[in-house]
Image (cartoon, rainbow, N blue to C red; front, side, top):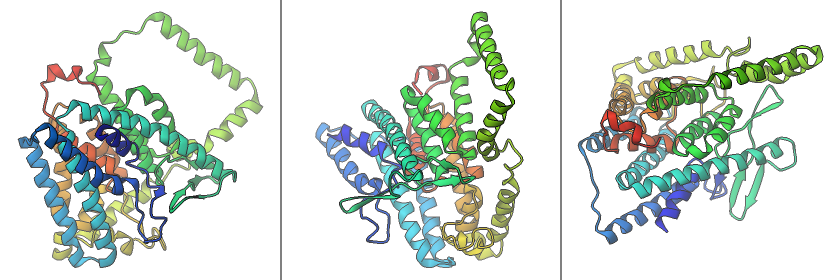
Length: 404
């Protein structure tokens, strides 16, 4: 029972497309918010029945202290917020996501069976991601409506479009960047579906997530001694011949070449290969604005402008958008919750890099991802940060024996 619930919780951890309340309360009630308290109770009852105490090591205590300080900073930002109501609502969400995942991580981090359940849940999450992508494409083509009503619940099928002809497929999430990061997490947890997760990662057209995925893949390969692997000459020759054949087949026909170029153009622009991939200047402007807003006064530097209230000073970038932000976790933390909040965020992400655990490659990916975006509303991000802190440290010579 508990194992099945843990699998379901992990598979639906990013399912923000499904509003179980049907938007009647004005708040999106995701499966994560409903399942988390039920899962915590089941895990506690299971441990009590087996008389299995909770192990809290020094690193776990450090994490819990840092998390508490972070949440205090989020709460304190309400007092100087430019939009107190928005800050209060988003602070409550932060408490639910950060606190909920921390408690779950504390209850499962030292149980191999529970970690295996999380891995199985990640595999389920990839398949659900694929299902939602298929349904989103059908909605994009007009075959399905943008909303499906399932009793009192509502399932959104709309997707962000790019260049007017390419849907950015974000699976169970709505934000393609959050969806891409979720796929990176699922891919590390569930090796059997890594290729499928990687293919769907490209379909999100999220540069931040793709870069983070590349960092994770490189670190995992390095940890598994890819440098010591030898590829046979036969495999190299076959690969070279196959690539050459494909290039000749495409290049010999101007019509084929033009068709391929037209098809790939939106993707090339999105990931910054073509002339249109130049949102770097806007991103730089947002980071500069974050630094300026966070240092506007001593009170602002201490408490920030309010958690989730960045949109108030970013209307020229995101006119009419209540979710506009600085597109960088570090800039957002400084501007919204002050210098102490930024320091805590840096410590939360830097600490696990010093520990030889299976989650270290993912933490490196998180650090890079949050330069270009922010993962504060992705519960799976907070869960893996917690696990990275709480997992018992292994010696360097043992690390390759731990399955990543």
